[in-house]
Figure 1 (tube, rainbow, N blue to C red):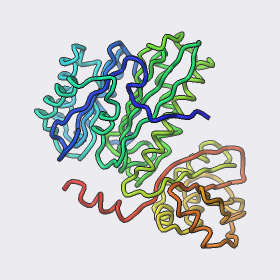
Figure 2 (figure 1 turned 90 degrees about the vertical axis):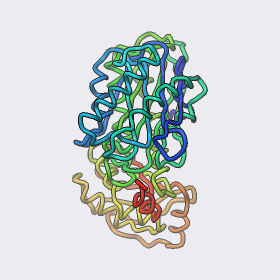
Figure 3 (figure 1 turned 120 degrees about the vertical axis):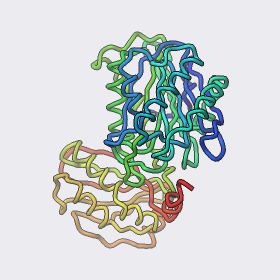
Length: 405
């Protein structure tokens, strides 16, 4: 298993990051950028919400180009549901960044996060672009992470290094996400950088497949947002032989490490869910197919009843089985076994679809930990999947009831 470290976008060779205060939030850093001094190929995955923010639409079009050099991001305003003016503002932001960096605007990606339905204060954004470009450095990973945060309580980064063709290859990343998180991505943004040499087509394949097993397996509150974007840039500075075959061992190695980075970010997002106190991993095994396993795991993670039970440290396993039952997957309920686990130990709650006697005190002790595992053994096949969520607390309501205030 690949082990990641807390390493940001400047970990791979050549990348720089910057952050600045543009006045889009009440206080603190609210604009950031990632820049490569050499050409990159770029891949992207986006929200599946029919309502797509202007920067999402902009990036989807810009990705058709052969080269990407920079990403500019703002927090505090999502630039979503802003019509033609929103698209114009996204384009103006890219042009300003391109001008400041002396590169074509078409090589700049634009990300936004924050409140929906308000036009960007474009004058502040354009001044922020100039300020960010003056701060570009190899040492600004964590400032960039801070600039991307909205209701996040902590920065999110992950990185790893590995060997290809006797060359050291690195992957680094940054992400934000805390609320409006649900399978098919949530209010999350991520920029992943690597110095691997790889074709644009295979970079996209790797990111799309890794997303399905990471960002699309997270749920905080059941809401899929308008702005979700993950971008993956590759500048080839590692010097490995260019990866051009999906069947090669080199591609498999790159994908394995990319997946580990994406999973780390996904778990960090789930653990930092709005008002969350516990990270919950739902591990489904013995399903009839990979798709059934994924559907069941995501259904359990999306259940507010399951998440409130975890918050209350109540071993209410019936809610878990019920959520599996309405997932749409095909299974025999009378074969399912359910256990809860944490660093305090493991307790069996149901065997072959029926409850078993267990100590409520012991169950509460296990559920009192910060990280909980819900283990669901379907006993129907060989497939498995893992999804992540958090508990649902009183604080979630407090945070979202006055989010615009």
